[in-house]
Image 1 (tube, rainbow over the protein chains, first blue to last red):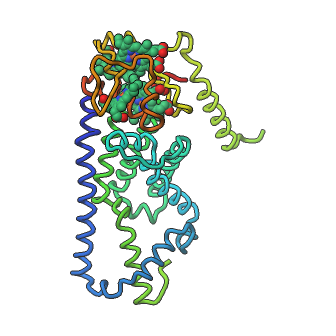
Image 2: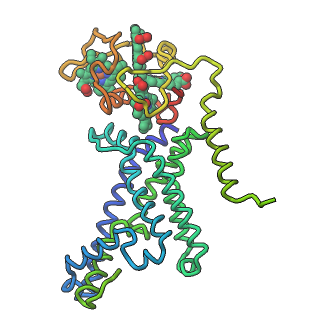
Length: 219
Length: 129
């Protein structure tokens, strides 16, 4: 068990980080190339002003028409996204392990906040899962991969919570925690999770198209 | 009779769970708690304590050199034939992250290398405070 864990938390972690970073660069490069091939004018009307205006709008809770139409989804979504990014990055145990490996550390969340954030993430995933099942217009757009992705995001958080509570089988659960976290990281560039790093470009594109071409708002 | 409302059920469930959680540390308190490492430099504790039955542990692990842990280091070198028995690690390793890293660097590292002994947060920090 020790060997498996040390391998998972060592070499395998490097593999997943490299796949993640290279995958992100590849996706961004492909996007730029596709835009050049299929929609050349985009480079002419891309405007920092309109792009940032639109990105800013969409980062404000209830800042857009569609958010005001779906207030519950908006609140759940903002809380979920804040927690899903902040908890893993600022979890004390993660920062501690990074410090032990590289001698570098940064600010950490109080344990209670990290705990609450984990619950927010899991509750948010249950909500998204149910929404995909229940709302006909969302269900129509959902395939098995979309549900699987929600489960993949849930795994590292659920196993982390389990280990924090010293639940039974903690050795296996922690191995699963590390492996699922790595699978998630490596999956980001190649799945819908890529919106994590693509959103400024897609939003900026829409903002520019609406702003400089159609002279309209996109929110 | 009024039907029982969902909120009432939820409330009752919450109270039950909270009662259970607050009672759990009381279980298994019959035996004396095992000896733990407890450095006075930690003023608040994020984790449960790490058990460490000093002599039994070192017998089991067949560690003979006290200075493996109670070392004296000068210019980056461990001084042979000297030890710091009687000093707390924090007297030289400060507090906070560096102190935690000193403990983990000694305890966890050996467990990882030998494949024996706990290496996870949850398998080492097991003794409720």
